[in-house]
Length: 102
Image 1 (cartoon, one colour):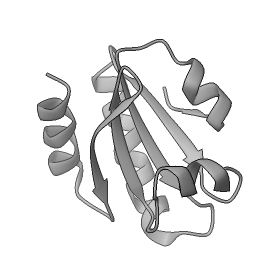
Image 2 (cartoon, one colour):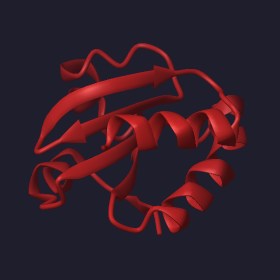
Image 3 (tube, helix red, strand yellow):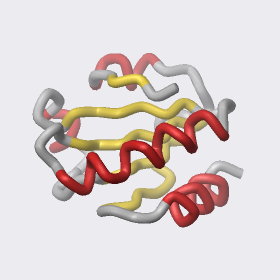
Image 4 (cartoon, one colour):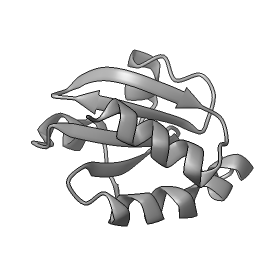
């Protein structure tokens, strides 16, 4: 299950891997990728999947240099591992997540 969280909550997550979807409610591609992101979160339950609204978390978005959305960032123990910017298909997204979280 995907939770919508804030910057403070992101810092408090205790999972080794966190996959964060930076999005906005008005963003068309963000709405298109959301179902894939939700499905993948159910298929890979050992990883924390979260959504972060860039409009509500401007400071965090700026700190992480999120300039386009959707941006999906994979963190390992709080450090960025990789990011994917823009819309992509479910198979590509899932393969990327699995490769980066080995």
